[in-house]
Image (cartoon, rainbow, N blue to C red; front, side, top):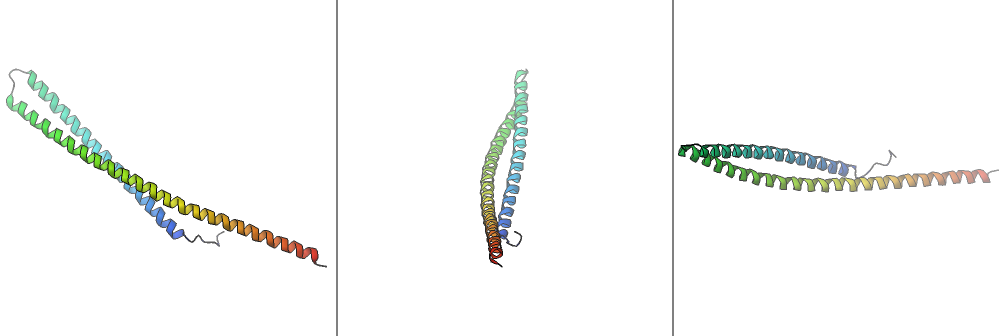
Length: 147
């Protein structure tokens, strides 16, 4: 079987490399999404803290207008930051989905070439068996008819 070299071997290697690259891109996309999710959680925690501080300030008499305005300003900024981070997260998830689709496609290409290789190997094996059987029959027949 070593004598019959698979003629699409270089194509198979190329497709495997493409699949590996797709896996790496997907892993990078997952890593970026995890970082963005951490940023989002941090911003949500900070927003919650500012909200709690604002509520505490509003309970005290006398109310410090400057402190209340400062907390409202920080709340508004963190709300905007949260929306921006959510947009980045949505974009990251879209990229991840594209990476997933590319990986599926690359994997299908590899499997298709592997199926061709396996089918050719099976055909070569069957042909070798058929040839060997024919040669054995010829040898047997030659032995039968020799004096």
